[in-house]
Length: 204
Image (cartoon, rainbow, N blue to C red; front, side, top):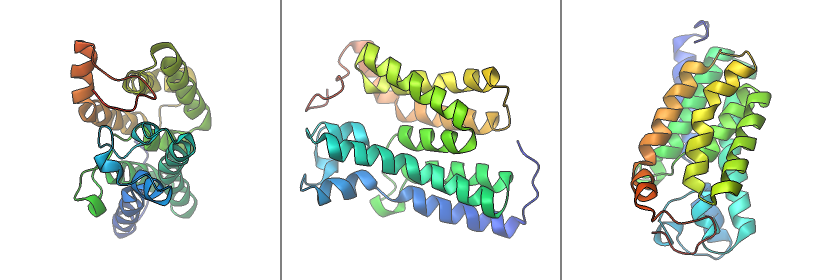
């Protein structure tokens, strides 16, 4: 954890603003703008890029992936530039929580993978790129988005050790636990062999 050097009131304001940014449900917004309907009534009902892809619209899925990642990255970069590393890590956590529990959707949000990627990229781009590569390789091999997400999240501490950067290890561990908790249903389907593969129109 970084030393706390920012005024507590500014940290509280940072957390609130980052949470609101993270709460923006880009998957829902993009799907509606693309004429795909309410994403929460499609496929698994999840608001992330994987479920957008189930509509068959790859452009909308890519836009959702990039925007969900960007909101985590932007929160971190702005907080770091304006206040410092303690605020940046708090902003990353708050934006991630905002995606998982968005106020705009009755606190029923996504699983946080793209936002996690964005946060890590902003904190250390080398670790972030290694994380993205891990996700991509796992997705290619397994063709199952949830497995790729879980493998990538679990690999992040190892990449931090590899690049000799343990500054945000505690943050990453917290986010990884939350990702695994949000994927509890996926873990059950993976064990049962019923987890859908990337691009399938319907969830299992």
